Length: 287
Image (cartoon, rainbow, N blue to C red; front, side, top):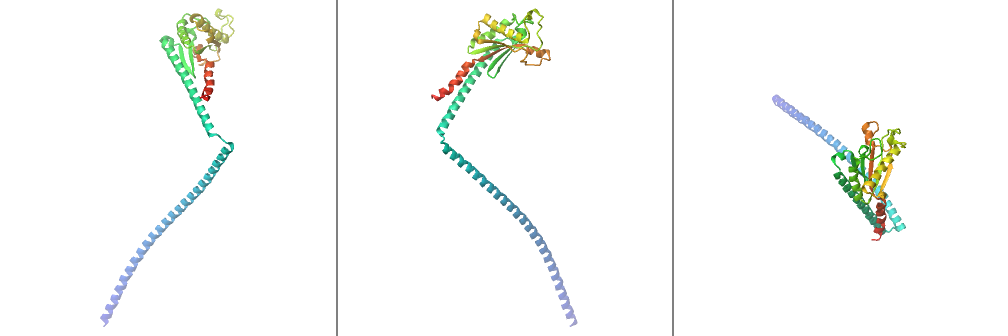
């Protein structure tokens, strides 16, 4: 009997021990699951908050867009009302735009024609000049005008405004270009450096300053073109700019040499050019 009781007690103790171990394992599992659920909950909570913030931002944007739309609609309605109030003739506006476009195309054509003629003129002149002449002759086209710049030592006697013998060949080629292009006017422009004129020199008698010298040099070229090559006097203009139109600094000898130049400026006749422009709108209106 006593052995039986001991066996029963041992059995109960083992059962309780097994039960205790099982409960502890379940508790650990529950705690782990709880932590995971808590983390998932926190993550879901943060995502929900972000989504709510995004929704709020989109609602604000939608509200602003509605305001902007309302404002634009109001502006459009106002513009339409003004248009109706002023009785704007859309067809007339279109005609005016078409006329303006035609006029612009006309101006572009006139300018293109002028540019083409200038290019041909320049090419013809440069081809006629020798390599030696090109060293002292500069030919450029600037803003629709042909500039031929010649060094003073290739045109005039030293310290003088008289044309030298060397100038004849170069001026003959320029004169041919001037004669061939009859629709162009020609300005001969004298320029000097800033060194005062030596009034004591015999060749400078009665010359007061660089203004006089530059004007006399330009006048000498004009007279030479008329007398030797038959260029029409009415197409020629002589002018002097003295030392006041330099292309380089007068602080160096090279700069002074560049400034002592005579420019032959060939331009389309202004009255003919303006005549083309003035007639364009009338021609377009008659179409």
